[in-house]
Amino acid sequence: MIIYNVTVKIETESHEEWLQWMREKHIPEVMETGCFLKHRMLRVLVDDTDGVNYAIQYECESMERLDEYQRDHAPALQKEHAERYKDRFVAFRTLLEEVE
Image 1 (cartoon, rainbow, N blue to C red):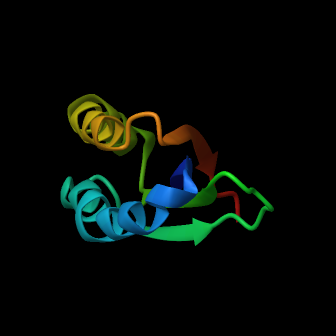
Image 2 (spheres, rainbow, N blue to C red):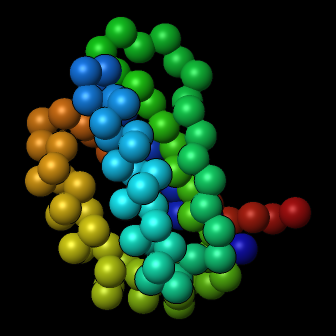
Image 3 (cartoon, rainbow, N blue to C red):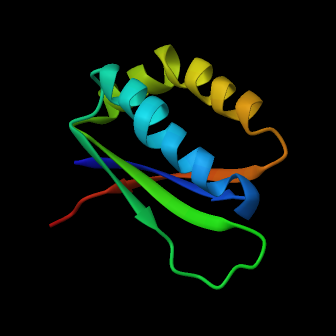
C-alpha cells in the first residue's frame, strides 16, 4: 500500500474556510479520480501561532496508480488550490509505503 501524504499549513485567518473547501470540494475531487482507495485528514498537533497544520493521507494500491494521479490529475487540482489560497499556505508531499 502506498500512502500519498500532503502536509499543509494554512494561515489561521483562512483556516475555517479552507477546511470546509477541502472537505466539500478538493478531497472529493481527488477521490473522484479513482486513483485512491480511501483518505483521511489529520490535524498535526503542534504549537503554531501563525497557522494550523494538517496531514491529508490518500491510500493508493500501487505506484502505477499514484503515477497516473500525478500525471493526469494533480497539476490541475494543485493549481486550483494554489490559486485559491495564494500566499496563505505552505505544503509538502511525502510518499510512504506500508510495511505491516
